[in-house]
Image 1 (cartoon, rainbow, N blue to C red):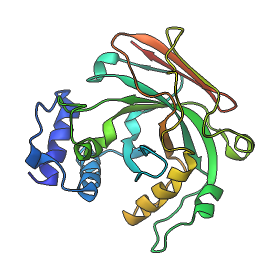
Image 2 (image 1 turned 180 degrees about the vertical axis):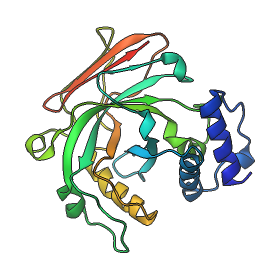
Image 3 (image 1 turned 90 degrees about the vertical axis):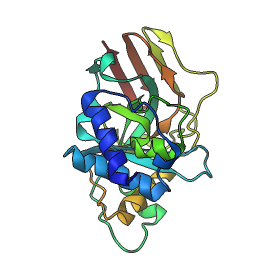
Length: 253
C-alpha cells in the first residue's frame, strides 16, 4: 500500500462516514515521516486548510507527536455538534496556545526562548477524540498518527493574553473543572502527561519548519489532555473551566 492509498481510504472514511474495517500490517506507515506525509496528503485530497494543530507526548521525556486539524473541524465555544457525526466521542480538556506572529520555516532550529517569546495567547480547549478505524484503539500508533492522531474536532474558548496569565500560572496542575450534564468527569489523577505543555511548542515549531511550513498566528495549537479521555455515548452538555484561563462548553446533540 502506498501512502496515497491509505490517505485515500482516510478521505473516503471521512467523506462517506464509513469506518475502515481492517488495517493489515502491510498498510501501517513505515515510520513517523510516512505518517506525517499521509496527514498532509489527506488535507490535499480534501482541499482543506489547516486551522489548528494537536500536539502531545506520553511523558516529559518521550518524543512528541502532532497532527494538523482541518479548519472546518475547529469550533468556537460554546459549540453545538451532532454526536452522530462522529464514529465515537471521547472528550479531553486541554490548554491551547496561539503565537503573536508568523514563524517562517528556516534552516536553523528555533531556540526555546524564541518560541516561548512568540506566544501571544492561550485558551481552554476541548478535543473530541475519534478514529476512522474500526480496530481503534487496538491499532498501531503510526496508523493513529496518520489518521490525524485520532482527532475528530476541536472546540476553543476565548483567547486570553499569554503574558497576563502565564506569570505564576501552574502549568503542571492547574485548578480545573470538567462536567457532563453537571456531573464531574475529572479523574482522581490528572495533569498533562507531557508536563509543562509549553515545552511541546518548541518541538512543534521546529517540526513545522522541517516540513517547510510557517507557523501561522491564526493557528490554535492544543497541547494534550489534563483530564484523560472520557467517552460519551449519548447527547449531553460538556462544560469545563481552567482557573485564570477561561471556560469551554460543548453541546453534543
